[in-house]
Image 1 (cartoon, rainbow, N blue to C red):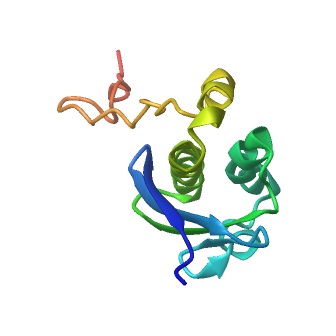
Image 2: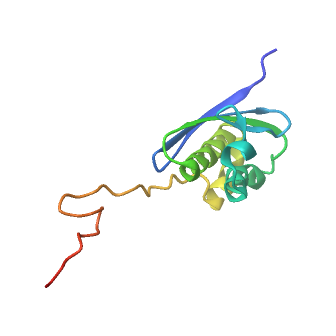
Image 3: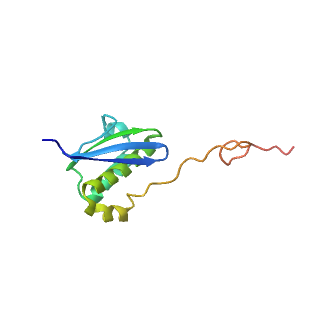
Length: 130
């Protein structure tokens, strides 16, 4: 008998997360390591767990996520969106609650590109008058 699992993709900044949800004991694994070990910051752990708590299924499903690109904060945001989308696949009746909490919105903010004639995206070079 195969255990049913649900898949979704999440993105944030330059990070992409592939997320699988399956019934279990509430273990969250990111890139083959426990979430607490991988993320290392309590704030990011809370962010990743927030859609599960909102849906009321924390501790009843196992989450396996594979992330690449970006930094830890971007990857945590990508996993959060992936979890929320996977929950919608698993239980469509929870979609309004997740939408109301803002978990199904892809955060569009990404780093602005550097322009020529500037030090960074907007900062000009230092100017000496005399």
